[in-house]
Length: 235
Image (tube, rainbow, N blue to C red; front, top):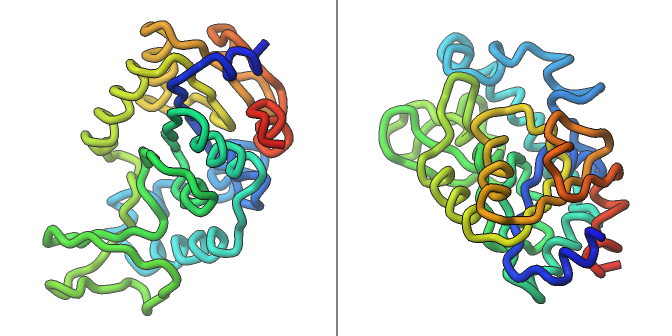
């Protein structure tokens, strides 16, 4: 059983996607009501979109930031954080909403960045803006150039350091729990494959099967908040 496999494991990696935060009230991207069914990603989440209309892009990210500020970590987020008090647990997340950190998790790799972080389009400045909403588009405090969300956009590569740290965790863990990810986006979807090749047990928790469900050792149909507390003995 998946619960026994988790109990016996020492080094656990949680790989989480948008479905992890859906029960906190945040939209997914490719689901039935996902963002990309409502909006054209190339007009809101690409370098070209930012060059053409930085204010429009920032307006959209401000809306997403407001939604993330109003959201609360759900029972699934909390269960993962509590497990870190008992075992060596790391989180690799495709999410940018900061809810894992808000729940108390440590050792988090954010593959696609963070809604509350910014970086300059000209200099090397990077910063964090938690609850501030300066008139869009905001300017760099160092050189007065435009700031952009510190988010990986369409057409951009994942940060090398994040990928390298994720690969290290996947080769070192003895169990990976995939939660709320459609596993459709490369190269992030190669991480469970990497863990499997290095002998890790794979547990998948999703509201529906994915194209990678057959390679899982345990595939559980369910939600993060409805499944993780009992599965991790954090209920």
